[in-house]
Length: 255
Length: 312
Image 1: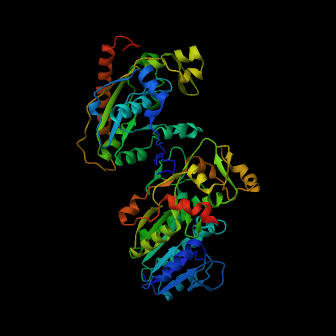
Image 2: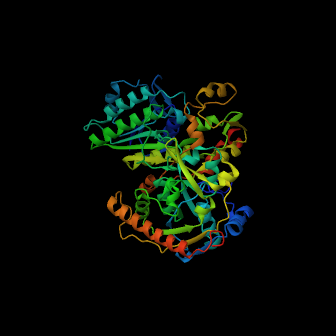
Image 3: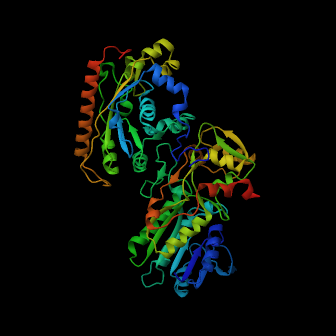
């Protein structure tokens, strides 16, 4: 407990629901709609797994805000530790419920009974090639499955459609060993404003039924083959769901 | 636990511990060890002088039938005495470990006071470091000496079945007459506030520190345990509590700036304090809780001990 009301993860006690800008972005700009919200547990811990797309992705914030708005539950989102090296950015993320993506942090959050959001695609999601549009990237080495198994919690997959269209990638190039996308936003508005400004694509989310694991919790080690198998099965279910949502979508802007 | 030897007996932690041990009717003898000081008495306990590499220490322990040894001498930077002596303390720990390792000797319990400084503060480290998490691999002091001393203590634990060795890693100490490097750094009129960072900070109240040592010695605890008072706070909470003038400092490694900062009134800004001030650190104390120790104080109590009222 902090003196200013933040919890020990640094998450501010101020509710995002009271932030007018965030409410407008969620309801009026991206016009977020959900299906399958009943799969988000009313109480108790779960590891939420979502697809990650778009430059400076908004998906983490959309899931956090949405579950807060629609379900009244707080979501902690795991993010790359590099953000915490940048002055103000790490502090801001912490206040918004961001936590350094470390297995110990995830384990502790889950054991405290929280909902924890993770993007298994990691950095590969936002910077993928143009021909990989709406195609889920490899789910790391399945570490997120081990985290859920160890804590004895279910994985709840969440599929987002529309986030990639908020920053459409026109081309990619390689620089300093990194894949760098050129987005429509950065062409129109320049590299800085273009990174922050997102097009008003309609964002739809579908929550898939929770995946429970029939293994004992608190093990130091789970078979790699089992982890990879479960991770791949979750990824292919999410891809199938994403494909069907894309088929049903009539317009990028109207949904 | 009837005959207790306390090393680093002139440090605030050692003094507090000796005073508390003296109050315990079950303890017949408390002997303090402090290098570079002549034989004397503190708080009614005998104080003897042994240099770190003194071979006579083993014989003294046998003669006095010491059954419990608390080694506080490794943590001067935490306990507020002068500068860290580093390698010299490692030698004294080696000597002490050798002295207590005789299976026919009287010692049954050894408690080594280490500190959270063994962990590296970094953006990619977990918020709460557990006992099993990796420790610093660098050669920076005091981490390098603490880790080396821990290794000797672990070694003697592994090879001596008759001995219970507890290694207690203390968070930043404050209150109960204790002060550490961090509390010293906010004692002056100017307090550094790194721009754009609000690092987590975790304190150990001096009274909790003493209670934890007594718990470890009484229960003949074995293994490595993190010790901290409840909860964590942020650097901004510390600044709000001490109400001194917060000076924004650039969030870079403070190395070359340290002499300059000290010259303008920042006391004890240590070499390598940069990552600590940006990312902070905290200890996971679950293991000690499972062993049965609950700290009495929380971070508010610790901050109260830092505050202007407490310092007056």
